Every structure is written in structure tokens, then in C-alpha cells.
Length: 294
Image 1 (cartoon, one colour):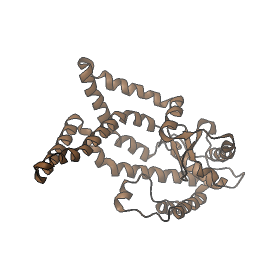
Image 2 (cartoon, one colour; image 1 turned 45 degrees about the vertical axis):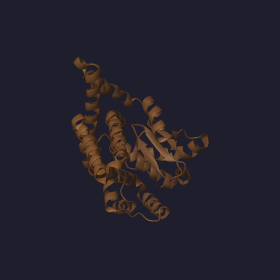
Image 3 (cartoon, one colour; image 1 turned 30 degrees about the vertical axis):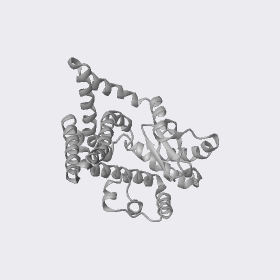
Image 4 (cartoon, one colour; image 1 turned 90 degrees about the vertical axis):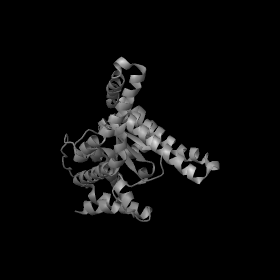
């Protein structure tokens, strides 16, 4: 952006389609988590089994507290507070982006991710993080990255992310347990090798079907999550395009295009197989460049 030139005021308070899709598509996993808790409550307290899932939902309100967000996200993503020198470099760029968008820069907290990759991300309701490599960028490029992340916050992409993470946690733990059991099935099958290859195959297939049947009985919602993977990835890509568009509206389109081209050079291209593109939460850089140029 040109210094001293007022940026456009970006409308806020409107939730983006990709944010709504993310909430809708999280329903099967959230329902799975609550079902797991209901089953646990049935074992521990049959008459009042509903207290366990209801209590878990109510406890999820803690995810909206800034103190909890600033405690949990650094643990999950390996974040640290910027040093005084880093903050001196980072703050002017962040404030310039917030002035352009007409938002209060103090509402958000800046973090540094312990990664050597050139990247940044937004999370929760108030978190914006950049990698150490991003701090080596010149101010226009750094502002372009920060404008993209602010776009995620303004579009509502990250607002309920911590709550969804909390509600999905029991289902994710169950899925991890099922994955461990599935990995153990071939080893158990090989234990029957002395009885012949046919027996090994039969035992492996029966155990695999047993795991899937138990999963379907305990938590049928969880079986839908692999089918929703490509749709959820598509909704995330929509969110990335929306954040790019927000950054462009703030005047950072050319800087963002130049940065995406730099990423392509650093990664020696941006080619992906079809299935990888379908499951990717981030669009290919060349696709983002094409849309930004429009």
C-alpha cells in the first residue's frame, strides 16, 4: 500500500460461507464425540448419562476466553511470544494492516511459530502467528501475509475453531484408538502363519471387519468423516480464497501475488496429484495467483 493513503473499510460481522460450511461439516465428528461421552456416562452413571456430554459442551465455553486461547494455542502449535526486537519489526506492519481494515490492532495477539518455513496462520478469536522466516520479509510482503491472516479473522473462519476442536476431541481420541487397533490387525494375523497363508488372510479380514463393526455399533457418525474429507477440504480452500480477496481489497494484492510466486520458486513448483488437490486445505499457489489477478 502507498504510505499515507487511506485503505478501504472492510465490512465486518458477516460470516463467510466457508465458515458456515466448516461448522456444518463438523457435525458428524462433534456428534461422534458426544456419543462417546454418552456411552462413557452410561457406564459410569446410567441414570444420568446425559450429564457427561452436556457437561463437556458447557465446558467448551472456556474456549472463548482469551486467557484459555493464549494458553492452549502455543502448546498445540509450538508458538512463542515475539522478542522485543521481533515485536519492533512486526508491530508497525500489523498496525498498518489493521488501520487499512479499520480494526483495533490491540484486539489480537501476535505470536511467532517455531518453524523455518515461510508461513503464517490465524487461529481462535485473537491469535495471529508468523514463522521466524516471515520476519525476514520486507514490510510490504510481511503486511501482505498479515492482511491475509486478518482476512480469516474478519470472515469468521477461526472464531469457533477452538470450540469445534474441543467438541471433536473425544471422537478424535476414539479414532486414534481405532487406528491403533487397525494397525495391530496385520500383526495379529501373522501370528497364525504356522497354520497357512489362507488362515492368516482369513483372520486378518475377520479382525478388520470386527473393528469396523464395533466402530459402527459404538459410533456410526464416525464412519461418515472420511467421506466428508474432500468436502471439508474444499470449504477450507474457499476460506483461503476469501482471505486472499480480503487482503486484495486492503490493497495488498500485488504484494501477495509476488509472495506466492516466491513460494512456488522455493518449493520448485506447485504440482499436486488429483487426490492430493482434493484433500488439500490450501489451494495451489498458482490457483490463488489466478484468482487474485482477476
